[in-house]
Image (cartoon, rainbow, N blue to C red; front, side, top):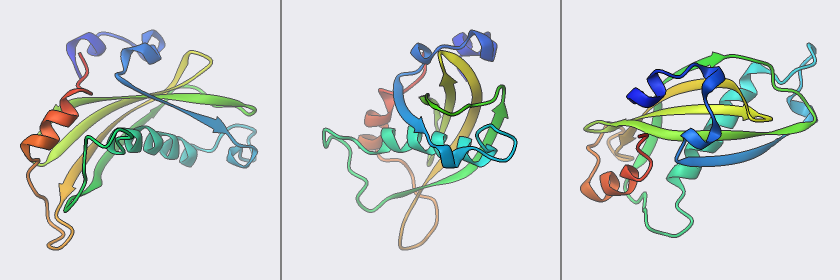
Amino acid sequence: MTDSLKHKTPQQLSIEDFPARSRENVRFSDVDCLGHVNNTVFASFLETGRVNIFWDREGHFELANSMFVVAHLSLDFIAEITWPGEVEIGTGIVRLGRSSITMYQGIFQQQRCVATAETVIVAMDPETRSSRPLDEKSRHYFNRFILS
């Protein structure tokens, strides 16, 4: 995590702290028998945030001959998510490694941080199923999402 975010508690985080932002509706089917959104849905919301970085709507980034897989996910639950409503997912990159990308994310409901997560994504060769280095084009693309 960057120095600026390192000193913030989850209660001090804002969606504006993140370079990439996504929205998702909370579905009735996301609610469990306890009356709040089930913990597994939080991971799905985080996936939405990550995918929106990897899927470049403007066509500047191509994933040809590469796959990205989750190698590590650490998720801290801070508050409940309730239905009806929507959530915002903030996503940024903390570190670009040789073949990995470390992301930091926050999930927000009504401007309140309800969860934070750190995820390590690894670039993988689809034929060998082993890690592959990030090329310069990828590094250039991902630099726009580095957390400041």
